[in-house]
Length: 118
Image 1: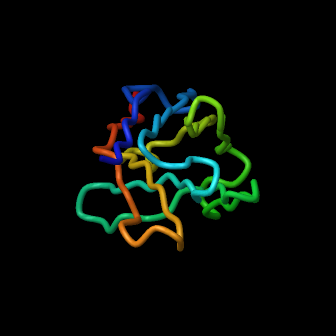
Image 2: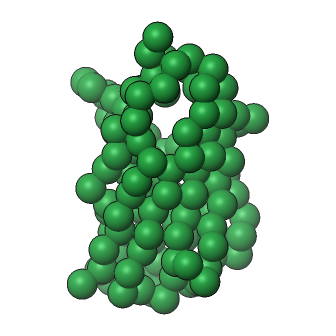
């Protein structure tokens, strides 16, 4: 059974930093595109950043220059380094794994809460 487990969320002041982690099990991690999404109360889930199996990355305009996505294939872990956090970054952050070769994909984690507040 594929599992994605996020960690690293919490409460942080505006301007602060957090690093989210997502550990993946039961898939060939290196061939999956990995992404971080977020959902704020009353809003739709949106893509924050993704990193393709090729290593190419993509960021939402709202987080460019502040967030960095990376992965450690050996540890089957994807990270989201979040700097210069703003109140509008407050949301539940979800990890996602997707592959066109896997009919069961995409897979989602349970989410981790990030709250940016003074």
